[in-house]
Image (cartoon, rainbow, N blue to C red; front, side):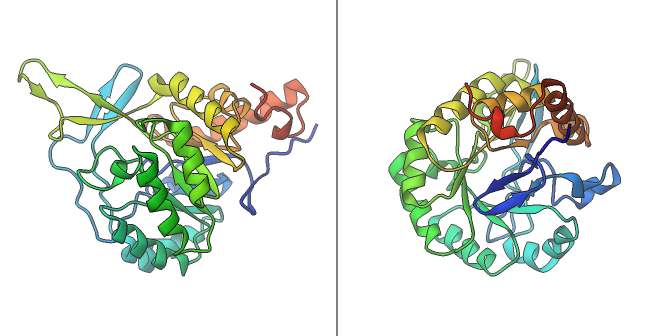
Length: 301
């Protein structure tokens, strides 16, 4: 039986629902040594800011049970450098490109969006949910009305599909989702990392210099899955689910919870080609279950 894995989001066709998440896959070229990256549905770029960022000082990664914590701090070469250097190489990968855009202020978001609008990226994924920066980022993703301002202003700067990446740390993620759609979001991606704390009991201080850091990995999956389901039922735009997906079983759960596509994040660090394992597992499940299209199971929970 032929299975149909194609997904259309905001008028853009994805060959399958597998997208690699921002901050876990570089700009894609690095992974071509491990597998044929063109087989992915899409790639979300490393988080980009209008100015280059060196990232946070001190420890940046810490393993926890069934997951990891990170405090990278949006280290990146900057939007202009990406456009002039990495984008052309990404286009050769023959997959959908989501430019993940961060910022320390609304003005920085707007300047970045204006520049990206003039490029060949397929989406702007507006990151209002990064927990590892000291200004901007997650500050826009906690209160709905603050997010409304950011999304509505960025919406004016671009005609490209605007995907907004939501924080699980929002006061009310469903209200946040609805607000972002009202402000002009064409689609939503969720969830980003949870805010967490790790302590070195021997040094008697927090492991990370910024005290808290973002928690990701398999440990967050049940909570992320519930949030994705709640949001998918509340909005009428495509939803891209993520949070602890490490197997095809996980990915299918997110699709049944209402995800149009899914993003693979921390699992890329465990096995560089894990996206291909997940894709193969989805195909095998569909064939074994007599499912011809993901539409048959999407949002059934």
